[in-house]
Image (spheres, rainbow, N blue to C red):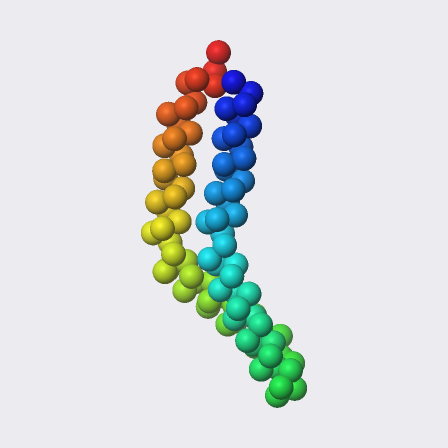
Length: 88
């Protein structure tokens, strides 16, 4: 029983990394591009770095949202299916 709970926890942590990866990677890429542009033009406005990353995050959520939701729903249904075996 402890192994099953540990495996489910491990799977939950892995799922959280996988589901958050597209948003993080896209935000990181946009942040690097904006930082490069700021360094070359010597314009250091904070909102210039913040706003594009927020927009990229929303775009990533729009693009990858259905995939993320499918992964989360699959995990939740497996968790609820396995839950009776955890309780004794």
